[in-house]
Length: 503
Ligand code: HEM
Image (cartoon, rainbow, N blue to C red; front, side, top):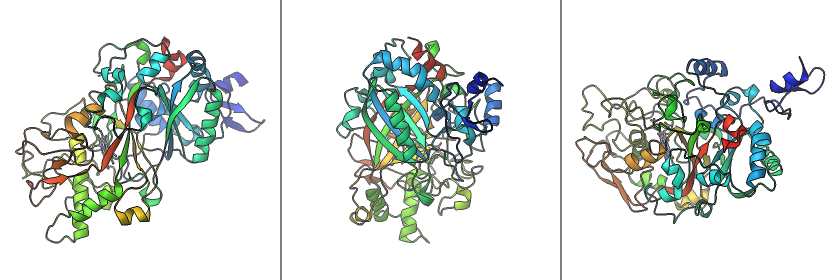
């Protein structure tokens, strides 16, 4: 084999007998990985193997080597750094994007096997301001992206930008690098390489470090609930498990089958819109609320009543078991079984789905953001792939004792979709914040999603949380999740990066 073909197949010869992985086509050496960048708690569905994904992709004519790795993989990273930047020299940046950056951007295929994962995975996405800075004048066909998230703040339920991280205000951010690995030292050393490559081309605006929580909390968000259980399966990528919805690739990827927007620039194909939100979580305050408001039911201790209230707010127990299948007590065995933990519809024989909330409240977070049999016919359009990660430290003893957050922590929320107004924006605005949703129930106003529903910082309420009295109105005086802002980005295909977005 010639050295040139070895280079293009992703390997370079380090010595006569030893092969070392390289960024594909670059000749830049990499140390082969032995452990994965990704986490895999039992309750989260496994990703397809590279071979399975390849077979599905060929059948659907999807090119997983051209799609950035974060988009279809979901919430599974060990460590992640979000590096928000502005472009200071667009000619230099474009040149680097086409060469040194493009070869370092990690594809979907690469992430699926430990042996092909780089030491640190890299993805990149641009805001409309970033595309403007690069001279890309094509209209991507998504008005929310074009306007930017700041213009959407009040519609999303934020009290304007009062609580926003200042860097998200004023359209300063042109793009974001997403670096993922399993150690912070890997992230830091990759970041210094990136800064060296892009010296003179970009400037850091802001950065945020995310990490899977430690020990048995790995995969759980800061309130303690396992996250990343229910994601749509995507035709051309993975096969649905029982209860998992299969969506057309164009729901997530631009230009693919069922993309709701008819006309897109050719280069945008296989990109996806990334909605980023820094959502701070008031963990001690949330725990205090649960302690103060246990569901009083025969046979439950106050602690069990508090755990039940928490489970009914979310729609799942902290273990991940759905309340629809485990309505009174947690069921860790059910939780850990991905073939069962998503296999429910909110419909039960002998219960009227229009008025019965015995198993799951209408307002529970997972029911508001993904109604199942609540829709008489399947809803093909309003789906996202969630790829967020917790940020900030664990709750300290002083915070727990005082029931007061001192140090910010939360979820670096990332959602991918082909159309923000059908995806993240729709779920937040039209469902979570809409007191009238779900429609056609006996309660005309079931209330807010008690977790993420936002009322401009004003108090919220929800019915149905107490299964002993569906009409009990529980007031939520303060938000447990406070938006610190964010931005809308476009995560292009690798071929679009090679052509530096074809402008
Ligand atoms: C700090 C903020 C948030 C927290 C703590 C949180 C927590 C959770 C948890 C624990 C689950 C259940 C586990 C799972 O199925 O993966 C879940 C599911 C989900 N969340 Fe969130 N979430 C947050 C923000 C959001 C936002 C902003 C949206 C969209 C607007 C959203 C949309 C969803 C969706 C679509 C599901 C899956 C529902 C299903 O298919 O059953 N989440 N979230």
